[in-house]
Amino acid sequence: MTYLTTEELAKRLSYNPRYINNVLRPKHLDEGRHYVRPFGGRKVLYIWENIEEDMFCDQPVGIPMANGGVCNG
Image (cartoon, rainbow, N blue to C red; front, side, top):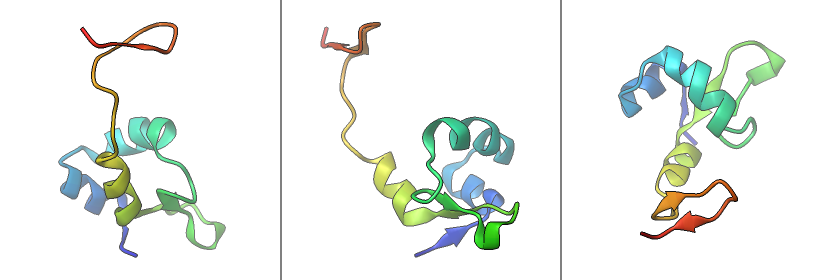
């Protein structure tokens, strides 16, 4: 597995490190699958293989609807 710091992940994804910490991690990344906190500390290391796999997973094509469905146009 490849472990990355926030700055290294930001370079690979072309995002600002603050955006990763404030938006991506709380909403889209799961602790244990996408990142770990070694030795129970504050430092966060991201697991690149799992993030890369989930980035390219099949996403529904269309417009999301309020009831959870998708409008295909």
